[in-house]
Structure formats: C-alpha cells, structure tokens
Image (cartoon, one colour):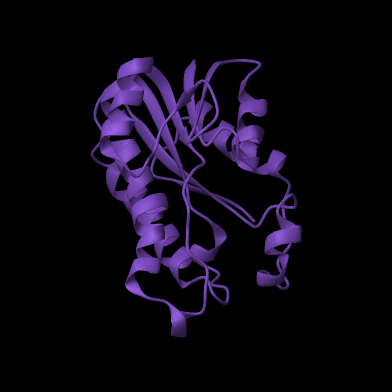
Amino acid sequence: MRIVVVGASGTIGKAVVGALADQHDIIQVGKQHGDHQVDITRSDSILQLFERIGKVDAIVSAAGRLHFGPLAEMNAEQFKIGLHDKLLGQVDLALIGQHYLNDGGSITLTSGIVSEEPIRYGANASAVNAAIEGFVRGAAVELPRGLRINAVSPNVLQESWPVYGPYFAGFEAVPASRVALAYQRSVEGVQTGRVYRVW
C-alpha cells in the first residue's frame, strides 16, 4: 500500500513508520521535516500536499498541538490552540484526504487517553480528543467507496515520560512501538469507526 504518515518525525510517527515500512511504500510528512511538508492548520497547505503526492491507500495522522495549563488561567485563545491544530487540523486532513484515497482506503487519526481519563491542566486535551473520537464515529457511517476511518487513543508514552510523567500520576506509560501496532491494525485491518485504545 501507498501510505502517507503526517507527523512522521514525532515519537509516534517514527514508530508507525517503523511498523509499516517493511511492507508498504511510506510517504513521510511533517511540518518541517520529511519527504513533504504540510501545515495542518491551513486547508490550502493540506490540499497542496495531496496535489503533490496524488492518490494513496491510507492516511495516518500522528500530528497536532494542544494547550496544557490551569483552567482558572486559561483563555479562549489558548483553548483554540487545540481546536485549530489537533482537532480541526486532523478533521481537515480527513475531509480533504478522503478525495485522494483509492477505493477501500483508510484514514487513521490520533486522540488520547485524556478523552476518558482527565488530568490536571488537560481540559483542552480532553475536549479535543473526545471530539476527534466523535468525528471518527460520525464520519465512518458516511464514507463511500469502502473507505474506513479510525482513531488511535494512546496512553502517555514511555519515551515522553520524563516530560509528561508528572501530569499522569498513577498511569502506566506505554512504549511507542506498542502504540504503533494499533495504527498498523487500523491501516491493514477491516474495521471502521473504531477507537483503538492503547492503555
């Protein structure tokens, strides 16, 4: 399969590429690195990406920024960071990308454990991740041509524990290699409208 991985230079993205590269043709995309560049907060950038790379069999997104901070100090502009980047960026990637998928192709987006297990300072992340999962479920019933869409919801990563560990007291971190298996399952499997939880 010809697979585009957006966010390929990140911790999860690298693991996904590693899990899929032996069997598939991977197009690595990042904001600044990779075979191609894209800014998922801009529709024109996403459209230009797909015009450059053409038809693909799968789209994987492991990209998107969030805002972490105390709710009492949070303002609308800070909250919009997650809305415009991780949520609308991934949704736009799916909305535009669906037209560049071959029949039977798939889209895999990324949410996260805080959609169901909130943490202190994570209100933006909880809202955004829950919305991504809702979009996946809603989009799955409408996609034509045998197209599929799923999300992967990872726990905090072992590789990211030194930075994010203090926010996840009592959570058991998971390795990126295990998270990557859920993306592989989404891409190579048959299910749609699923949220694969790697907790």
